Length: 373
Image 1 (cartoon, rainbow, N blue to C red):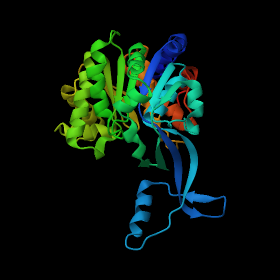
Image 2: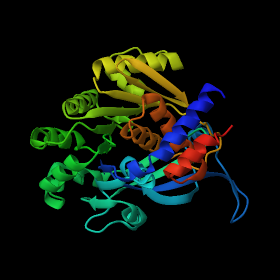
Image 3: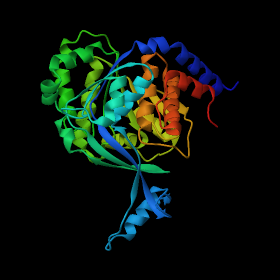
Image 4: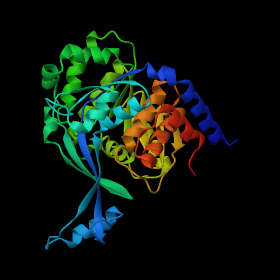
């Protein structure tokens, strides 16, 4: 038995043995919320029912470029309308593992948007604002997310206190075994909210150290000063939590550039070295970085790297990173080391892109035991 196959078998066994333990874990996740439309762009339409899609972003870009100075007509076809946002997708995945999930975000106000109805059956759900809207144009080589974010400004500390309650927020934060605050980039008042939590709630908290996860979510459009402030606030939470910061490959290079690091080496070795350098300035317990085909994590200067089950023809890609995050954090909650947590993460993502659905823990174990070729 190869080392990798043996590791997959070991992690599958640990996951199956942890089902009861996982069912007792309490999580508190927020704070975004979107209605996602997964969209294909039409290349050639044959009849009312049949069309060929534009398969790559480069072909889409060529189509757009030829319209310069002329204009053009573009047809898109919605494949799925589903709950969206980094937080709801991650929380929904955690609920599918059997964990107890409380979610707070922008899922409709004063009434929940219907797209979140099934999620609300799996989790304890609260909302303080209307959701955003994302048109996710999916291609075989990536996706283009077109967002409408106006309502996200209503996710702020005042509205959380007025519409949810400061004491209730503190109670949920303190009783949770895991906290996840994600999608910083799209929530304009997230840094202010984190600052308020650090100043008004955490000094009075009596809970033990637990895992707390942050995901910036493509900070390219935010200013350098904004990003630096967010990173400082994330590090400040280390006083109370074992902080995990999750980045995809693009985000890792963006953060490296903000920190003044050399981002020129785009190999695996270069990304591993860059990730170590990031942790020397952003002093969190663990940094996890997930490119498409593998994932790595850095704790105490030690890099762990695991290859994922790459799928060249995924059913869905929007939410794959959030499933990576949920699987990795499940491993951390269960006390797995970084290698096993990474394997749990890439397997969760791999299952999701193949099935367009979140796995249960038994699903995940079966996926590990029957690793795709």
